Length: 304
Image 1 (tube, one colour):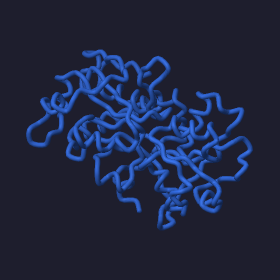
Image 2 (cartoon, one colour):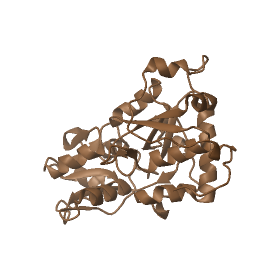
Image 3 (cartoon, helix red, strand yellow):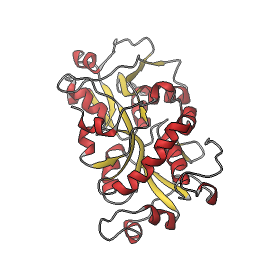
Image 4 (cartoon, helix red, strand yellow):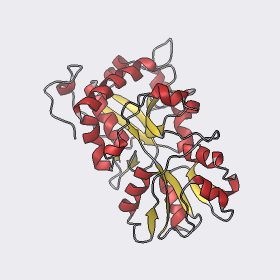
């Protein structure tokens, strides 16, 4: 996917070969901390180069990060992580799929080095983790039965219809958007992964699924659901103060691991400039509308 460059910006691109990006079991905490720096417990770039891999947590949500039919981990975030790791001289990415609400706890416990799940950058999450700069932006949407019988256009329209139930990821921004719009908890079904959300819809347990436009459109095509379901037009959600949100996301590192985060940010900045970012994520349905432009993590962390 990446462009052929004679050398990476760190001079090591052709000195390593990236390993298979599989759904490998992550090593135990004792093995991880053995390579950690004593002062912070966070791995440095040299630590990762020496051990030969970086551990990543994903959530099984196509197209951001998922396990394919061959049992391999892929998606926009894992593939981009692999390209950045290769640029930095890290041979392999070892990824594990976990429930959405376990991503940040697993990262902060030292079980993973990075969350590669297309996680939205929000002020609340910025208190818990160290985000990279955003690598995409997106709008929200719903997947609904063909014809959109409940005429759902936003979380506010869900709140207006007491008999409507929507499925969202537990501890997700969609759950927060729904609550901000006045959707009561008893109108929400919570799940740990996007695949579980769509199962709820196909089993007629909910009237809609709330996720990003890219996620819903990609999964509808991959699961062959387009004959019976459709994705609504994208919309910008609002927060509790009624201000529009800016859904955008990226990779998350442990709060104290800003040095490693900054190393990856340097590579990402180069990928944005030379087109490698777009080239890597396009196969997963991320078109020009996903370009975050001048949007920064600082702005997203201060929003609201």
